[in-house]
Amino acid sequence: MATTIVALRETVPGERRVALTPEVAKKLRAKGARIVLQDGVGATAYFADGAYADCEVSSAPDALAQADVLLTVQPPSLEQIAALREGAVVIGHLQPHLAPERTKALRDRRITSFAMELLPRTTRAQAMDVLSSQAAVSGYKAVLIAAEAAPKFFPMLTTAAGTIRPSKVLIVGAGVAGLQAIATARRLGAQVEGFDVRPETKEQIESLGAKFLDLGVSAAGSGGYARELTAEEREQQQRALAEQLKAFDVVVTTAAVPGRKAPRIISAAMVAGMKPGAVIVDIAAETGGNVEGTEAGRIVTSANGVTLIGTIHLPSSAPVHASEMYARNLYNFLELSLKDGALTLDWDDELIAKTCLTHAGEIRHEPTKVLVSEA
Image: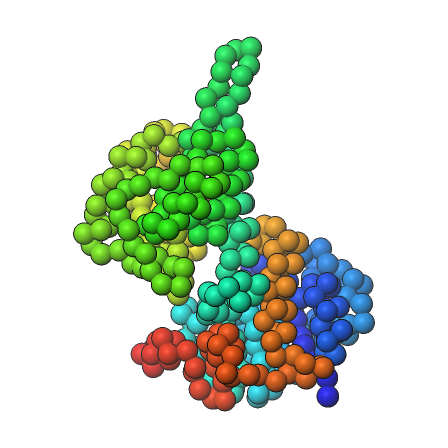
């Protein structure tokens, strides 16, 4: 019997992406799956219902009642979880560290859920890595926002009125978002430096034509992520960074630790030491912010004239390409289990086992299990 795969309109305010694009729906149909969509599922990402060839269109309640697999961008609501049949599969960005009650609901409904942010960071998993694909959008958009807000040109310009010097831009964090931000700032002609506590990123930063800002602190972690700094390391980093920040016109911060509050890197005192007219774009504002004083979804001006921009929903600001990449990530993950229209989960596959959040009435991800038990 063909597996029924469902996608709904996203309901979180500001979310414009869709978990299933016409391109990926066609691929899943070719794999023998049945596709049921809520009407208008891709409208905010400019995918009309008519573009989903050979897919069934239904209301949200009817679609959920039929779902063997629910694909999501944002985590499903408690009401949506309650509407799924027991044993259904949910695949998406589930944010288990933010809502223990949602994880409990998935467990109690015996839903098999896969939180894509738990996906192991291995070479084999790259084509499924939603964090990386969406971070690329964030890094790109953050620099465009900074360029719009900056009171200076980014590139060097030679004019009849004299030469305009390029803006000095610092990108904090050299993950996918940071590297995309560096590349974008370089394309715009800025003089770019990149900073990361992981020493292995120096070569990546320099390969994009930027200078590596060495503050003498290393926090190499596991799985491609930085570890948290000790108090002594943080103090050393902040002293060195405070002095360096005085020279920059634009700063974009991208540092994140998955499943935790964003690390605080730039203090209010450091902002106070920056030049008037400087701009800071804090990509991590939604998870607490890298910069003291930034507020998610708001633009704040400090007492000394520094503009602090706390971005939200950056991937949703480019919903076409962000959706295309996200849907392909989900397809590549789903393809591990979808054979001739039937879904068979191979628990010996590391990618399936380690991405699983809940299954058969149990929480499979140990840190989340502890969090739920303490809630």
